[in-house]
Image: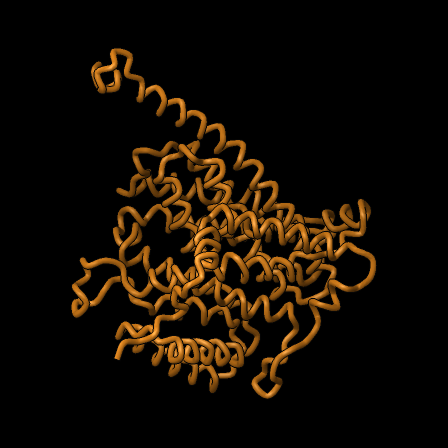
Length: 431
């Protein structure tokens, strides 16, 4: 009996067009920016309407799901984001650049260096700063994240003529960064583990795995299994976004031999990514930004006070300085000390610009900040401002560097296309 595909196309051409727009990386980045600005404006209006909405609780208490709207956004909606990230990571490992160890070595190492060095910068600031407070080191992992939506969105805007290898490098780095980030959350930001629901979650995850490996697409089977896995992981005390990554990683990338062999084309992973990416980019991540990025600045005085907090300074230093230093230094050392090579189409200036773009931590940085310092604390609000400032500065510097490089590549492309004698062969090939 044929299965019903999860989120079938339906007959609404308008919905399909909207979904196609939301799959565009630039659209996702712009939506994230718009909802971040809305969150800041709303949080700084007179009254407590922003906090009232954010702290409004809804959900069944018997299932440990009586959560605030802010928690639903961070624990629930971000699980969709990480599910899509898991699908993308699996695709890179099976059919993308991560399949080739030699090609994958540099971006994987860059991801590790791009997480370790920002964390080191954060720690150094919070150890040496004269106003360092006890507990500040808890946020060491905040500047270690890279926001895929923002980074790829800006690259798409300013890099129309940049080598495609640069986007591949950034994408690979970002998805590995996401996997390492969720691992850090699971290990270092989980206070207590309730093993019973976690073990049951492994059972529902196994059932989901068997179903997708058999290429079953029935929403009435897969969706309950996925929701059960998410709810059980949440009840265990492990951050629920871990469930999203695990669910994404078990989905097969290639078609089965029964359906025409691995060479026949993409498998269930691409089908799910096609369906879920618009929901992630158009709803899940923007709503998370709306519920997480709002912080009452308190005017110039409040902003100055926040920027004097070593926690905020550590986040900014990690994102703006630590990310490019970690990524470029790790990539350079590995390329010199091993057989790993940078793509022939890239220059080190390109890598520098891309590494600055990786300093846009945002989504995962905000998530780790909320886990490290809790809700409503001064340190937590200062972290949010630090993430916003650090990500903005990184984006602006990266945009300048990459725009300059884009003009260089555009000029080269124009010169290579010159055909002065009109014989249909560019002059550069007749020399």
